[in-house]
Amino acid sequence: MSTSSSYQTRQFNLSGLRGISDETLEMHFKLYEGYVKETNNLTERIAKFIQDGTVDQEEMPAYSELTRRLGFEYNGMVLHEYYFDNMQSGGGNGDADVNSRFRRAAESSFGAYEIWKADFVGIGKMRGVGWAICYENPANGRLSNHWITLHETGNVAGYNPVLVMDVWEHAFLLDYKPAERPKYIEAFFSNINWSMVESRLKLAGTKTAGA
Ligand SMILES: [Fe+2]
Image (cartoon, rainbow, N blue to C red):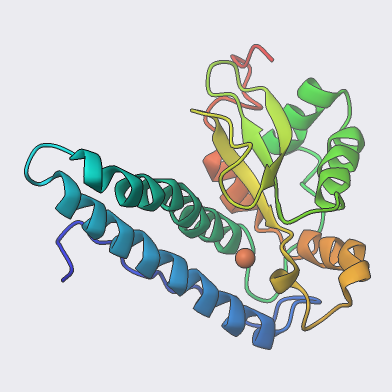
């Protein structure tokens, strides 16, 4: 059963990326579809537990497990949408434009764009399964980079994800060896859709940002 509040799998046109094959993307879109389905599935199953207005003692173990899994699946769905959205078909222009709001925000938050990038790339190279995410603090426009374990551990509540990079091995294993993650990160940078990244900024890079 699907309800009117069910999430739909979004479609992304990302053909012809640099260094990330269409084959990888097809496989990745399928994985993303799995997160959407499982988010809907868990949401419906949890709803059944609570529809009588209470969670009984005997329901608690199953209810708890499903609810814990919801955080994993939900973030898996949402982060993949951010990730696919911040790349562009045919490839991008590499680094953020010198006069862009993102560049100004990175400079005011890290001292220099190159320092911001060294941090973001460094996080991407960390051993483990997860994501590198650049967030904007919505209160003052300050940028900070974070490591997310799996999909759900390390996200900063209320912060605005601006640049999202999947570094699970499935994101690059058809194109690179497991030890070649740096090459994948380089490829990711050459495909960034900076106008999408800019559109996510709320305060950062503006004169009012008090970073
Ligand atoms: Fe992924």
